[in-house]
Image 1 (cartoon, rainbow, N blue to C red):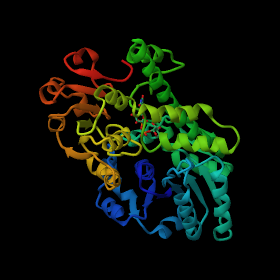
Image 2: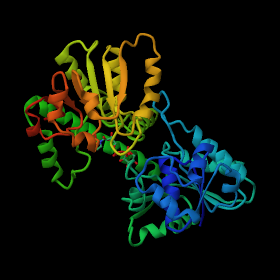
Image 3: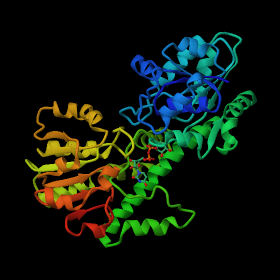
Image 4: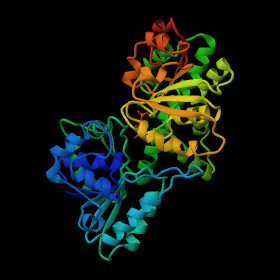
Amino acid sequence: MKVAVAGTGYVGLVTGVALAHIGHNVTCVDVDEQKIKKMQCGISPIYEQDLEKLMHENQERLIYTTDYKNAYKNADVIIIGVGTPERKDGSANLDYVYTVCNQIAESLQQDCVVVVKSTVPIGTNDEIEQLLRDNSAKGINIYVASNPEFLAQGTAVHDTLYASRIVVGVEDKRAEEIMHTLYKPLTLEPYNVPYLSTSRRSAEMIKYASNDFLALKISYINEIANLCKKLGANIEEVAKGMGLDPRIGNKFLKAGIGYGGSCFPKDTKALHWLSTCNGTELLTIKACIEVNKKQKLVLLNELINDLHCLEGKTIAVLGLTFKPGTDDLRDAPSIDNISLLLDMGAKVKAYDPIGIENFKNHVHFKLSNDGVKGTIDYYESIDETITDADAVLIMTEWPEIVNYEIGNYKKLMKEPRVYDGRNCYPLENTKEIIYSSIGR
Ligand code: UDX
């Protein structure tokens, strides 16, 4: 099939490459010329396992371009995979989605299924279909399908090819047939992905409800962890005991310093916003958001309690990205923590294996503010970062941090004081240092 994909971020590019891998001819469209040039040279603009390899393997079926008109005009299927960032009020900003819709409407010259992969509020697909039908050339049949993605960063290629499920929300038989043809290879060996056909609104809701449930699971285990710590229970044992019940399951029960990333923070806020607007406020999600906000600072508050004043103190922060295996910093706990450390006048020493360049852009605005008393420096090794520090805050469980020799904290720091937001070390190995973690 002839497929065009709008947007070459995590969702768009990975989807495009995966569809080329199962035999479709795919044109990936983006407005960013630099990005397109990179991809034309076989370089992936994002750090994602196996992506570049598959770009090479399937290069004869992949085109990268900024020329949306040519890409869209005779595509059988156009997939929208652009971002829907959060607005100030928590709602989803659909500007990029509608810009692409207008471009599709002005370009289309034949019947087409427009597939919305971007996460959009329930009912948006109906509006998009109306807009496309109103604004496209007469005599063309346009169908809109909602087809949410469930990929996680770091495992995006695997999560797409060996997906837990393909959800397709359609309202017409013809669209259903085309979508089934598009994904058929993934429903067969070796992938065997379950295929679920639903109404469009249900598909839109499945995406939000799934992400919000996972976020809720994390906030729940984090609250239980905080209570465990107070009461002398160990959250790792508790989570293991809970997870053995198949009704609960053992995934997403890892307590930590809070969730970040491109999906959970924005999707919880967007669904909460949507529920409030419709007079059925989701109180569970409201609590989940509040818990996560507090959780991000739970160890910093302990540190302040322990050291009293952080002005002039050297605080090493290990890990900046929202999780290991990505250079993404969106809503990463490191941002809130470092921001407050700088406000309090601390000397921050920061380490991350790949996230430093991105972090500098984030913190730049903060440092240009008047009244920020602290300083921040970046290091390429953990040894250098912790040398002479008064305390260490661990924000991301990178293997480099998890496998770090604990004895070095004692050797290199002023006082071996470690606040571990990702429970990187077994408790029995931390007896020689002052160590605080989550729920243990
Ligand atoms: C997530 C969903 O997993 C994916 O299905 C959806 O499509 C997009 O959002 P992603 O944001 O890439 O993917 O990362 P994920 O691995 O799910 O982690 C999200 C955050 O939750 C991270 O900050 C992680 O540290 C945190 N987390 C995850 C926990 O704190 N505990 C857990 O048990 C799991």
